[in-house]
Image (cartoon, rainbow, N blue to C red; front, side):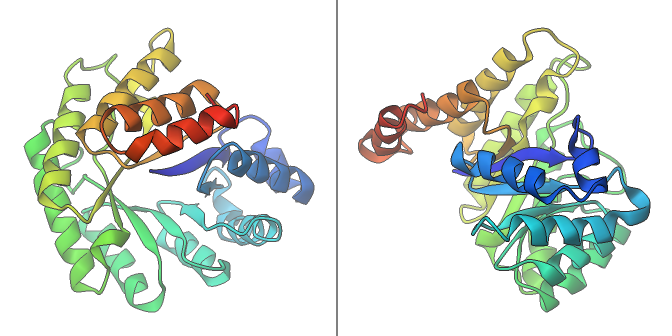
Length: 263
């Protein structure tokens, strides 16, 4: 399962100051802690710094990759910022993201032929975020078709079925779970990813809701998540859920995590 560490985001306390002050050691430390905790890659989002986003993204990527031999997730809705990151990234990154909105998708597709990367594709089109699983599935199919036509490999596509808060609509959790299952069955080589914490927004004991939803999503086919890897309970849930649904042969990963004190 691909774990993407979410802690380098300028919406989070202290991160904007690190980026603005070009505090390389603090940024590198934050990245290293996430990798050491079990993240496979680190998300880099400097989106609140609109006027200097491309410059900040390039600086952050180069600074992190001075000390970490891991791919990064280049996170921005702006294709120009994504390309700025792609130009300096070493190795094969994940870019986050595109949607099926016509204008946004058309600005992303040319990058497929110029760079080698993996991509997060959100199940949203020009009509907005669908209310039901079937429409999310239909949009996913269109996104996959468009990306593959431009040369993207199926295994490099990560579909995000867009988790929304159950505090505003109690059905959205089930909708996302149904969408994950349907997409994973129809497109076996494609990955399913989500930003976990949206599900619990506005409710108490958010961690509890996040962990239970995560385990349910893994059972349905989720194989990647953007999370806080420093949260030991969330990481423990991943190891346990994968073992329980038969995705960890001989419980190897679970036992290894136990021996390393990660549970």
